[in-house]
Length: 262
Image: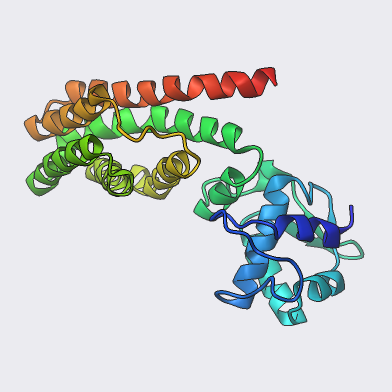
């Protein structure tokens, strides 16, 4: 596949969903190498530049209208993500997605911007369902009083934002809530997953998969999690969070089924 053609296709959108014209104006915001990283990352994630594609630096220079040093820096960044590798006499080749750092927030955004977003969301939801209930249980045992109090405050604000249909505020508060549960678990590995949870919550909203007014049952579940953590009840905290993640998985199930049957 001609990488120049692929980049033209990838340049049509960014992970933020904005139109980005191809050609000499392709690289226009942020660092030059960061914009080349964005174009290539989208092309890899969408399959426009599939596993095994060979990238020619000269062609990338011409296509992106940047210097060789910028292209090399972009490829170095992508190599650190596990997306490409360089071999003597072959050049730079695209690696299969099994080699990528799939926990990297940028890769998650690229995959959510691709036609495979439903499969990516499914993986993220299933990971959340495995991790967050245990994090809530540990938070009930380990959370400082200040964190427990903050969780109760966030749960109340979430309820108000959901009732008012303030989608933007609700998303911000939801991210804060789940991040605080993870960090309050006292497990630093769980705590580092907050960026992943933020991406799945943001992706759900950005792609129209979040109702304008969340169900009261879902809002109450967040209050139940916070209350159980504040009371120091690990079993109730785990069960309440499990209800949140189970509900989220069920809400997405129809999308996964449609994708499988398509």
